[in-house]
Image (cartoon, rainbow, N blue to C red):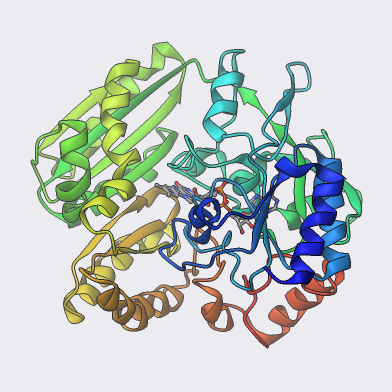
Length: 461
Ligand SMILES: Cc1cc2nc3c(=O)[nH]c(=O)nc-3n(C[C@H](O)[C@H](O)[C@H](O)COP(=O)(O)OP(=O)(O)OC[C@H]3O[C@@H](n4cnc5c(N)ncnc54)[C@H](O)[C@@H]3O)c2cc1C
């Protein structure tokens, strides 16, 4: 560390205590990477505040010393958002991880940003309440990271993404200024919606230090259908039929043959019956569940499903979901250099996007595994290179073609993983110059010196 950084670290230690600052290279190593496959970008230090006041003090000192700060939750992000690409320090939220209040009357949870998503979900469900956003990483990612990425997940089809559940946030600007955005109201049209602006801002505008989350009543029962199809086309037809069936699905996941082979079947114990599978889930009243599930199964059979499994109890649901939930990890295990894209297209174009993804794989001679949230058009296209060098080539060729194709289909760069570092260069294709210029002015008004998570989201002018 330079003498300047030493002085900064000493100032932070003075305010936050010695334990708040980590500078040993071996302890910083894990912070040099996240789940994007980018890096390593080792930070000069990591700072772990335990209270919002400490977090604000840390940001104010970093402003004074002109030290870049990269907020970090659990580091499960897939677009490199939590990497300190311009050096400086990581501000980790793992010691701000308390559930402060669950107000059953207001149906609101107040939490610190480092709370793990599944921990909150289990806590509210034990009280008959429900926090729907369910990124597949929910057992490790944080609510602060979910806010910053506007995380989705399978249930976003029915309930919407994280933004719908953030009612308010206490945030700190880079200079340490505290702002209380939003509140507990379900309806609030007072002024510009800065709470929404904060959601999905990828740690580039402010640090979230406390969040107010909307809760729903826990659904009475949940059921799911797993259907295997002999061809991808048949699965695609079943997606359209299910979307129009009025069965009120909460999830509709489509999984291709490669994903089934590498990831799902072994974990879930399901037989390899077909070339594609659908996993549809619904919630509601006990009395309705069996007929609704049976009807969903019949819809799949009419479109050619060769094998239909229904799940009504917790153990069967866990079994059906186990493979899908751990698919990303399973693919990473079999293909450590995998490159995961997260394009989204209008729902009517999911089948076309999937076919294009495979065609791109064939053209560039790279294996592809595609799965994702067919119900909201968000596909995870995984290219499976065998080396770091091959990955780099794929990034510049097949992945680039995939993104351009998604945009041509009226889609977007990312449905849930964010822009971060990895999609930054593509922003100029997705957004016009006026919109990008407005985004830059917004960034400058929240963080005039550009010290908060620099090198992310916005492309260089
Ligand atoms: C196996 C796997 C499955 C996944 N499945 C899904 C999925 O289904 N849906 C989905 O949406 N994502 C998914 N993800 C991606 C990832 O888990 C989410 O983006 C998650 O929201 C990141 O949370 P985190 O705590 O790990 O954040 P990090 O990776 O630590 O950070 C992500 C971004 O948030 C910023 N940030 C973190 N905390 C704060 C804060 N308090 N204030 C301001 N900014 C902050 C960081 O600067 C960074 O830009 C998956 C990832 C993996 C590895």
